[in-house]
Image (cartoon, rainbow, N blue to C red; front, side):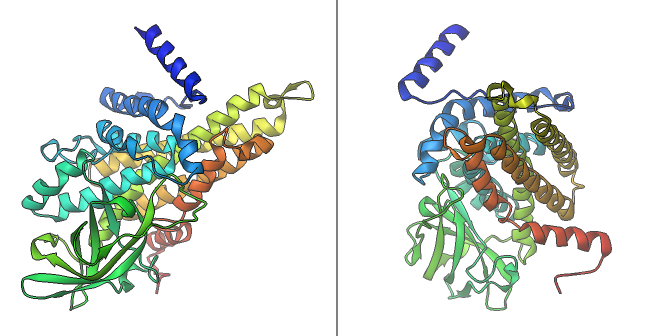
Amino acid sequence: MLGTISYINSLFLTQTKMKPDLFEAPDYYNLDELLTEEHKLVRDAAREWVKRDVSPIIEEYAQKAEFPKQIVKGLADIGAFGPYIPVEYGGAGLDQIGYGLIMQEIERGDSGVRSTASVQSSLVMYPIWKYGNEAQRQKYLPKLASGEWIGSFGLTEPDHGSNPSGMTTNFKDMGDHYLLNGAKMWISNSPFCNIAVVWAKNEEGRIHGLIVERGMEGFTTPETHNKWSLRASATGELIFDNVKVPKENLLPNKSGLGAPLGCLDSARFGIAWGAIGAAMDCYDTALRYSKERMQFGKPIGQFQLQQKKLAEMITEITKAQLLAWRLGVMRENGTATSAQISMAKRNNVDMALTIARDARQMLGGMGISGEYSIMRHMMNLESVVTYEGTHDIHLLITGLDVTGLNAFK
């Protein structure tokens, strides 16, 4: 049976002229011993799906700056949409480490694909589950979990990124509905989303979440073009021109800036794991290349400077893996703080970006070629290091936490 599967995979790759995915995950400190059997089954299923359905096509879609919509069902099948959402609402009912491992494997394939899953899970399904009522959960979550519907999250505005409290998007109570006006930008999934969880101020200036559905008059989602990063992810705007939102679409159970920030905590946790996947892929590619590429009569992996790069890569990946695992344990038992999540997001994305740059150098001119994944990862990570809290903002969050002195004011 295994021989038949191997033959079919080989035939597919030959027919489509695509390179096989030879990725081998590094585990220098035997972290698998810290995982449950369920964790490993979930991770391995996601890993095989990425190898089969993402790796063979992702370079083509990144080159043409298009999201591969055909993978949405596969994302749903591996539990990537709402991994920790209870089974009764269509989720996989996994713990936080299971969620992190899925994000790791998806971002090993591509950060843009992981962004699609992160937004759906942590920024759309999470607030409906946590802040919504039972009717909203029953209406939206099963369709989002199955991939029948795709969601987006509207917080960032043209003039308000790191300072979301300054948002100008607003809604007014019109008696039998709310009237929503404003605009959001840099929104993943917006060009084809079915719903958007939008954060806006009421007439008293209090921030609330509203579920806006495609088809509501005055709601448009123009796509953002000319990106050098996250090219295989659909990015756009959310524009609201006197949109009539039914009152039952207001998320009733939490308001204020803490509501969207709670969503971002969940998403940042996923990013902390996802960035490890991108780093692992760059390291694995560079390691394999270093053993095959001959210069001056020997493989370049035999030179000291190349070994230095590889040794530093595996060290930083191992440290990031331990950081993410410990954070997962704390998040599962409810003790992880927002500041601890910020530290992991900042550290792990910075680590991945450094590894991508060093791996790119190891491959020389081939490092910028679409024959290898490294340059795509490096460009993607330039977005990941900025979105959901920039590198510098996360440093200040840590600074505030350890000093008690607020640098934001």
